[in-house]
Length: 258
Image (cartoon, rainbow, N blue to C red; front, side):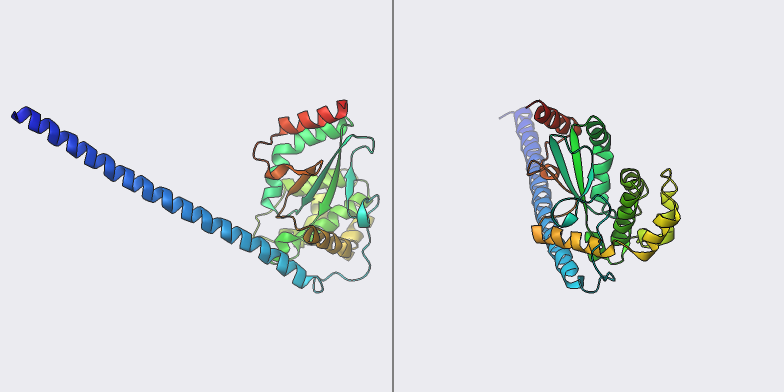
């Protein structure tokens, strides 16, 4: 065998060895990612279970007492839904949300323009259910206080605008900024006609706190996996990885033509 051929074979073996080392490294990284993802999923599931257990355990220690006073115009079983849109709309979007929840804000950011468009066109009605998962998970009372303030805004006929302001000014998940009534009242100044003595008293008194606790208990009983839970015709849109605002619009418009 010539020296040239031997050199060629040696180079080929070396290249093969290099490729095998790269493949082993890639396989190791892939196994690490799979294991890591599995751990994250397990931890996420444990967190959800922990949140539900924490909330259930705190139901009697929530700081809310007295009768559950529903906000004006609340509908559905137990009057736990705040409706936005016309009753005549052929499609109803049911949203379970927490004002401290980053994923809820992400949903809002992506879908709000489309939802507003469909609501304004009379094609979609939205029923909002307010829950307090983050309070149970990280402590604090910002979820409940913000939900109470939103219910107070509903009493004033300003829910939709204040709802959007809360998400636009959502603090970091670990910061319980919404527990401060003064902050919630300050934000009401961004919604024309909302900041009034009646609204301020409703916020400070926690008028709808017990109603929020009742709403959160209904969420737990339904055994939803987390917030936001967004349902259209019984289908959880947030769990549909193919869902987009455009697809939601198509579904609602198709229902309107049927």
